[in-house]
Amino acid sequence: MSLAKQNFSNVVEDSINEQISQEMAASHAYLSIAAFMASDGVALPGFEKFFREQADEERGHAQKLIDYQNKRGGQVILQAVPAPDPEWNSAKNAVESALQMEKGVNKSLLRIEALADENNDAEFVRLLRSEFLKEQVESISEISKLITQLNRVSGDGLGLYLLDQTLLEHGIHGVAGEV
Ligand SMILES: [Fe+2]
Image (cartoon, rainbow, N blue to C red):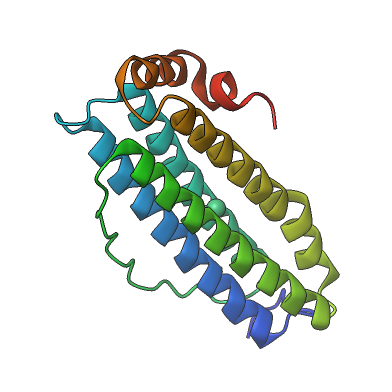
């Protein structure tokens, strides 16, 4: 039994471990998308850079939850990370799958926020609202704008080259603006 544990339900403790798994799965999927973007038949270094950063960011989210679980006196239990399913046939297709994944992560965060609220865990609700949900909404907005830009250039040709160069030089804010 942890000395630190107070007002921390088992349901919330389990949900944090589940969320750690989700973040690790997202990180793994982004690593796979980054590798696809770097392959010689795709060759989009700007997209590769963006998705590699996304992979690091998701890994950071998992670490933040691990630190939080420990801070509250919960037990960190890691799961096997599922293999991503790299069934993409284009950059656009890969980015669209990233959007679906981010929406899935957001849904899961909203579910655990409701659980934490039901269990009167004000501190965890605060963390989720101030950091995780906020960043999730930003990611969904950025990736949606990236898809709009990809659609604008029909996902190919000179337009795709310019979009990739913009991502490489200015990052996602060069493409999506500040969100
Ligand atoms: Fe995340």
